[in-house]
Amino acid sequence: MPKYDYLIVGAGLFGSIFAYEANKKGKKCLVIDKRNHIAGNIYTENLEGINVHKYGAHIFHTSNKEVWEYINKFAEFNRYTNAPIAIYKDELYNMPFNMNTFNKLWGVITPEEAKRKIDEEISKANIVEPKNLEEQAISLVGKTIYEKLVKGYTEKQWGQKATELPSFIIKRLPVRFNYDNNYFNDIYQGIPIGGYTKIVEKLLSGIDIKLNMDFFDNRKQLESIANKIVFTGMIDKFYDYKFGELQYRSLEFKTDILNNKNYQGNAVINYTEYEIPYTRIIEHKHFEFDQTTPKTVITKEYPITWTKEKEPYYPINNAKNNQIYEKYKEYSKKDENIIFGR
Image 1 (cartoon, one colour):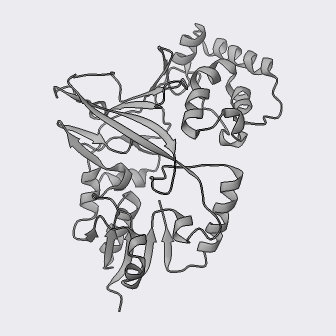
Image 2 (tube, helix red, strand yellow; image 1 turned 135 degrees about the horizontal axis):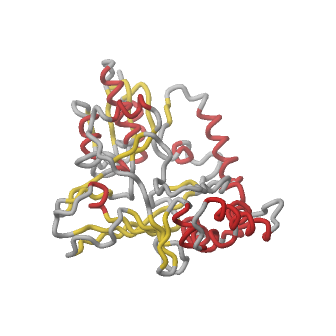
Image 3 (cartoon, one colour; image 1 turned 180 degrees about the vertical axis):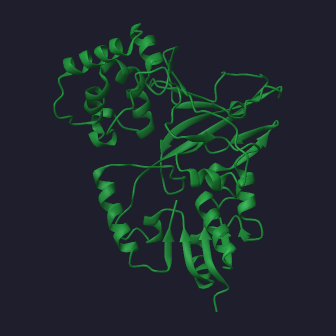
């Protein structure tokens, strides 16, 4: 007889919350993860007294009051507001695109002036039916914003020229005619004080966990010890690529400890010119308003080509991949013993 009601593959937020709720209902769960730690991509580790987001910046945000109240049972959140800055050839711009951005670009002061400037550029481009991402972006925000703040970043992120990417990747570009630098529109936003890992530790308290365990290396045995599987990995790999391989982009993180109390003055700075190989630098201490530690920790984030040996951080959203994914999605509906989540 199976020992567990659920085998949960992946100790990230989805898998951990599932395990917590199932355990409350008396279900026996085993959580496994191929990494040597829990918390998945939201894992935070303490370096030099600073909580470091090991796999990139993660800001918790939602407009759902129930979700916010739920997650606050496991951590106290600070008031962090995501307000990234973009650098293009030593020029600094506020993100998302707002009146601070437009003032820096054109010297405009009023929303009417900014809107007129953008509309003039859109009209001049005269793109009626965008054929690719570049044309789509210019038709939405004009040439100046596109060339300085969209083009290079996008081409680095996806590893392709913007003229080779489909237009539907950018359905809209947020343009705000006010001086609000808050990246998100959600009502609730913040960073858990003490880091994300402590949340997952509380969620998984009293639940069986096995780390350094790859589901695919032990598949036959693991499938035999549980009634159902909760799987948070790649759906195409789970079904042995029967409908084809999905494509992803991966990331490489280079983290340094610096003998400097304050390296860049902001948690996230994006680098939008193509010639700089990383897309952003994260200075982790600013997530928790820490100016007391004598050192700082920064992480440079490099988009790289994905292979099966690398972590799939971003699915490539094009027609080919969407068609393949839909086949897996439909096929999975027949599989009553599998629950997929991310």
